Amino acid sequence: MNRSVWSVSILWFAAFFGSGSTFLIYSILARELGANFFGLFSSIMAIISVLSMLAGFGIPQVWLKVFGREGWCGLRWLVPSLKLSAFSSIIAVAILYTWALLGDHSAVATIAMIVMSAFLLSKTIIEAVVVKLLLEENYLQLSCWQVAPNLLVLLAILFIGNLSSDVLRVFMIYALIGGLFVMLGAYELSRMRPPYFKLHGHGRYKSGECAGLPSIRSLLGEAWPFATASVFAFTYSQSDILMVKYISGNTQAGFYSVASIILTAVLMFPAVLYGKYLLPKLHRWANHDHKRFYETYRKGNIAMLLGGFGFMLIVSIASDYAIPVVYGEQYVASIGLVKLICFLIPIYFLAYSVGSVLVTKQYMKIKVRLMGYSGLINIILNALLIPTYQAKGAAFASIISSALLLAQYFYMAERKVFKTD
Image (cartoon, rainbow, N blue to C red; front, side):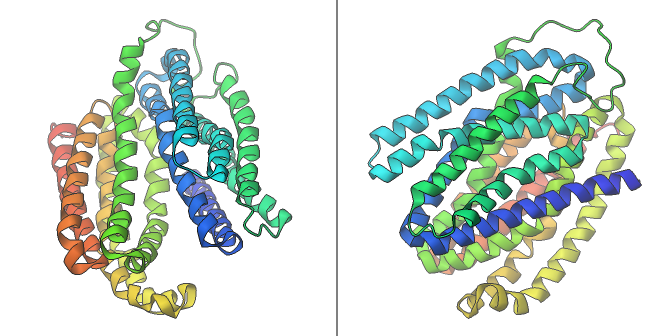
């Protein structure tokens, strides 16, 4: 138990430190660059985030699944998956270059997008390294990989000092640090083989009988649900703010962004617990220890429900005092919105627990379908509610669609995953 608490604490600290570094970077750049160039920076970072999903194509999540299912025989998936990831990365960079050269951009934007291809590749390779370290349960090194890139960017920006609208210098910092982590990541992944690779939970490596290399078709069948889920999750998290902005204007979008930032900060706790610490174990237990798998699901649901309600009360009460202090008096109008968004906290907490079992075995395709339905309902509700209720309409839409998604998760988990329990 003590080891588990220590491991989760390390991951939570790394997530908090990484998020804090990002917050400081964006705060400094917003002041130094001005609204125009900071907007350019933010839009290019959004493009890089979308293309990094294409470059990764769900391959790291496939590793968690196949190693949990096959143990050491999961090594047979590495060569074809690395080839597929290299191909998808080339496609992603080609799309970035094409958009940079053919799109209607300023010269600064074109150069910036070309330079940022190194950062795009680094995001992809860091995600793969993080999953390798999760499989080894090497949480200390994993935390370093999560914190180091943002920390180096922050230190470089502080060292340079006055950027005064020199946005290209910012992109060069990201590109150089990204290039460094591409090389470090390639070295780390080259050690994903015995005797260097220390797969946890499957005993010592034995060169025994494993099936042959999987076909690209089989790999695509494993990967596409994870790739699609990443796109749905990104679209779902960004669509509310975008629709508020274009329907009700920048001020309402600003109020909603404050609530969204607070919600994201609170959700760091279940995200780290289920997305980092428990995920490799759930894949392993789903295939080899079903009783423990079910017990984790049952106890996790109770803990997440209680924790979600606890955080809901804390955030709701603290928002009256914290928002004017942190964001200023101009954001007082967002307090009521934050209190409304608080109802999402127990829903999301419980969804992390219930939805985690649908990532295992063949159930990911079910989860992707449910996410797609919920995303569509969310967009429709936004279109109906935002014109009348503005930012609060988006909050209502999120609460309704998220509650429906949780209900679907629970129904499918009980009916499909644990139908014999």
